Length: 114
Length: 116
Image 1 (cartoon, rainbow over the protein chains, first blue to last red):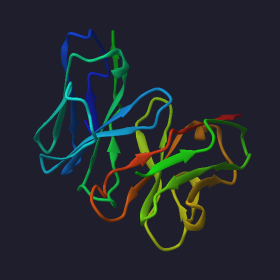
Image 2: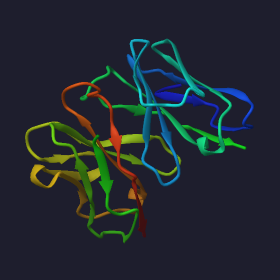
Image 3: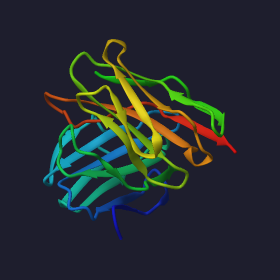
Image 4: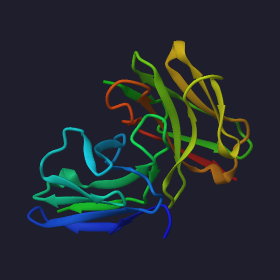
């Protein structure tokens, strides 16, 4: 497996469920990102981890809880979500957290909240 | 806060036509500029980027973009499109300095459909 992988690719959950999204990067990068892509809206940065420390939280509701146990793995824990949270969630990584390094994206998880 | 505006939501062209996709950003400081592309069924990937120097940058697959600082624009161009260029194109910008300098702000995307 190369690049950035995400599982599951599709997820349907009820508002009372708890689920987790997983991202893994095989590029030896030190920074990882979660983005949200809603219909007809720009891609929005949610969280950034650099060297396993959270360095950016873009005013994301607490029902989204990220976790970065090591530089290769990133999780997004979901609980008591709302239907408006239905979106494509993209993970990305870059060599370092700065303005000059290309971000490499995964295929995304399509989340539907019923 | 910075923002990125892409003028066209959907552009439809025939093969061999010329392409120009508009991108304007709002931010008063020094910026880095990017175009990303997402081909059908594939990951978002970098097409080209501008940091400094020659404002005309060339990317993969014959694409180029011109940074016009006075117009806060970074339009994407290709002289002759191919059916395989059918994709969604995203303009993005980040701060070149200061805090949160790695934070990318994306435009809404432009879907390009090329008919053979």
